[in-house]
Length: 249
Ligand code: 13P
Image 1: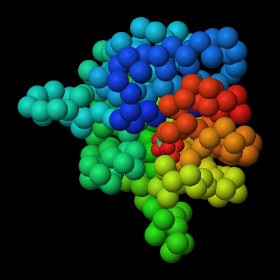
Image 2: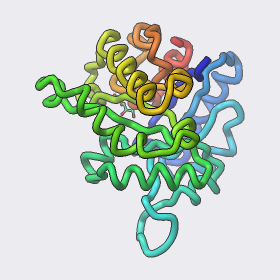
Image 3: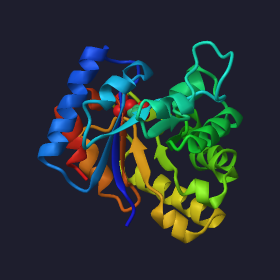
Image 4: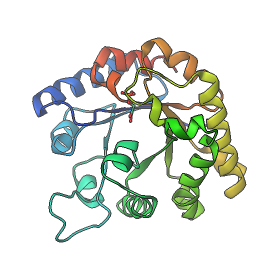
């Protein structure tokens, strides 16, 4: 059976002290009531090594990595550096990175490869904008995003990846995809993986949903057969809300 995963993307929130408090609380809740869900938190870069020290049953992720490993790239943080903090995962291709920082598929593929070389597991985001959905282009948009990035990988590398489907119109808007919309896209993504690689690989791939997922809607989203968990933004900043989402699987 494929892994169930709930990951909290904190985005650019919390000071180190606030982050430590949140991480400790999430770790305590999971430790007191463990299940078979992999729980991951993704704090800002600056917090990673401190937060690593307070986690025992929760895994650690970065929110981005550089597309180069070393050198004169002022302000960038490489996959190798992230790995050295004790983090095991890295979010790549979040829509905020694609839109606000103009990260394109070619750059994202470089990041994925460098992450894998540094033994980090990419949580790779894809998803359409509102205009693309309104024009009925949501499937082809996601297909193109995968074709020019993850589908360029060899089988053994692709197997490592966690995919997050995050429709851009649902991120931070309070307007989540309906369970039906999530299921049909996750099923579509799984079918593409099966066609491009094989069905052993598509059956084993964890595909998370992200976009206004909260305690009140997590269960109906996660109850779908192709939704293997969630990538949570706003609701991951409150330990009780985040844990309620974890418990919805
Ligand atoms: P929200 O849960 O705040 O909509 O954010 C989702 C997201 O972008 C997670 O990466």
